[in-house]
Length: 411
Ligand code: MLT
Image 1: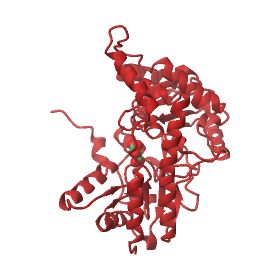
Image 2: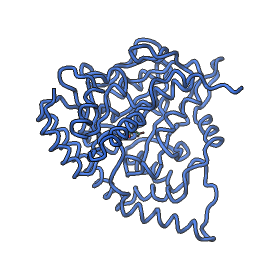
Image 3: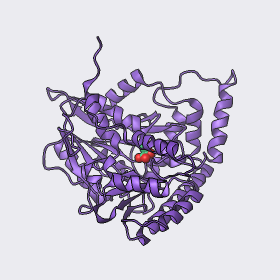
Image 4: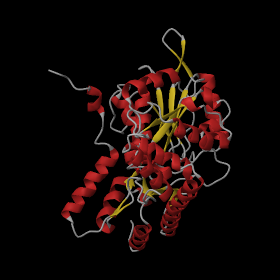
């Protein structure tokens, strides 16, 4: 009889956002009259912008015309999109990335999970706590961990606690590691990293042969001018870092699906004998075998993001969400909560009062005011005592939530 991948048996609970949906659905079924406001999963609510839709539709029309129809596209993405990414996301920011180092894919979530396939099984992986749960779950699924202990920590992962004391910035571990996941602007804390901080990580990675897996899915939300948007703005990062980006939050593509991963050719790793290999070759091989690319109309839609009109439109969209973040942050602060994030990221990270457990806060807010947030513990044990609010809701819902929050007697 076939056997399961037993690593899946080590996973605790369901995937965080699925678990939240399950609990919210049960509550809604039991209370159909309640009008629930969703500020849990970071899912966008504004429609695709006019320029993006125009380009999307043109792409669809081309697929219906025998003279412009396309079958399989290039595995790694159409040149028109890769060129636009190189020019706008990197060259304009003085970061060096080659077109053939950009791999167009259907999501940063998939890529941050799939990337582990091209690394040896003995690599020691360091991950922030709390963090976007995909990094931990994918590491467990890949068989690189032991079991989860009663405190919520898996054996063989090096956890980097992100707390108020270290401004939620992971500290370089003392023990030897081979791979580190970094995410800035951070999900869930909403904090971000400056040039000097990132340079320390890159220097450390070079000295210690560590690969940085850098998730910058929220870079478009950076509002402070001195904050790097890409790890490649940091000197020598090409030698040690892979970067993940997405159009999901940048341009409202959560339901449309388009993202990209950059693997620089200079990034080398070794086999057991010490022989060096370029990771670029391995990711190229992996994608060529297992991925058939993103559909042509979607790539056309993504390319429109880089036009003058497209840029103007997505900036307005981002400003709308960031105004939501400001409103939520101000409200929670007025109610006496300590609030982080919301300046360079669409998430606010709120400290509960009197050490209230994050799942208790979640339950209380859902039942009492029909508002969904995400309990910090779901992002890792060090997230206990915090909850995350997403600012991707519609403005009228944010204002309605503010009214409800103002009427709430928090413990
Ligand atoms: C989140 O809420 O953290 C994100 O929306 C989840 C995701 O991007 O997969």
